[in-house]
Length: 264
Ligand SMILES: O=P(O)(O)OC[C@H]1O[C@](O)(CO)[C@@H](O)[C@@H]1O
Image (spheres, rainbow, N blue to C red):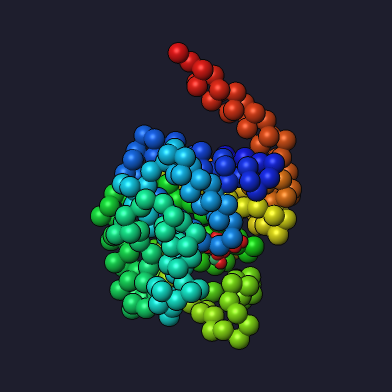
């Protein structure tokens, strides 16, 4: 697991966009795994800006989102499908037929199995973007999720329901169930990019990076993945005991990249 502690949420977004830009430069038809929540919004804005500057095209890209609320129609204002359309898909040149999000109105068991099959049939995910729940969840894999889990229905933890209630109007129905890629499904992505910003995520970041591998912190499963990059801002990284080490790794990596770029 490589950890980059960026100076600001804006830098987190820009470093993450660099990774995606680099992937698309060598693989125009890449398969991206995408996430919802507040954290990736700045990344999506950066990708949209780069698309407008003709730095990026999504014409041949395929996407798979991590999760969707059970019971919400795709066109529901709070569905993750609506979120993705508004935050990214409607603002870039992606072919809508290549964007995949579980359908919260289909039978969850059948939908989950079909989702796994669709991911596999398109060659698997090249790069998976992840946010991080305050309780250490990734996707909607709440604490105690099996580290071998596949896409399935999950009950949301109370903390998650509380955290995500900010997206719903007071008194509005908020689903307590979701279909989510499993932890084993996520770990099959060839590259993982986890983003976290703000002090509310500091403890979860520390447990994910430095804690024991444990189902109590589902994100700690990423310690087993051979190509995971965690990009946090200084607040989210504030509880890491190896802060200085991570900063030095970034300086050395930047130097190496500059040297690569300036090679004739
Ligand atoms: O970025 P936020 O809004 O803090 O959300 C963090 C996590 O919570 C979720 O939105 C689900 O609760 C995840 O998709 C995300 O990884």
